[in-house]
Length: 95
Image 1 (cartoon, rainbow, N blue to C red):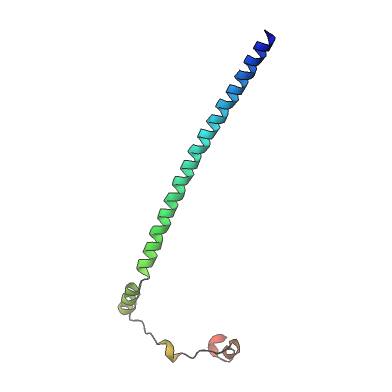
Image 2: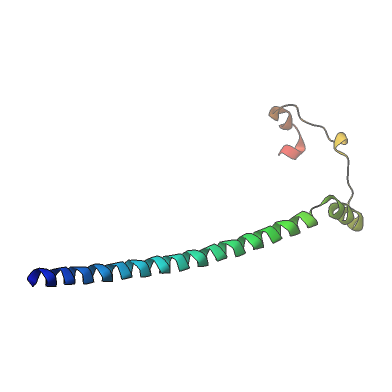
């Protein structure tokens, strides 16, 4: 009789532990799903921002901005290119 009571108590304790572990697993799965959704939302916002940046900095947009603001642009061939870093020491722009 004592052995049966001991087995019954042990089985009950094990069953309660299993139920608790199952509950923890379900809660963790729920938290994981929530975090995954947040990550996907942030990724979507990042992609939208990258798209807006790409549209605003595209060649057509830059050309339109330069033309509308009448920037005075010079070609790169007119600017002297220093051969080494020491060539920049004597130039007024380097100081």
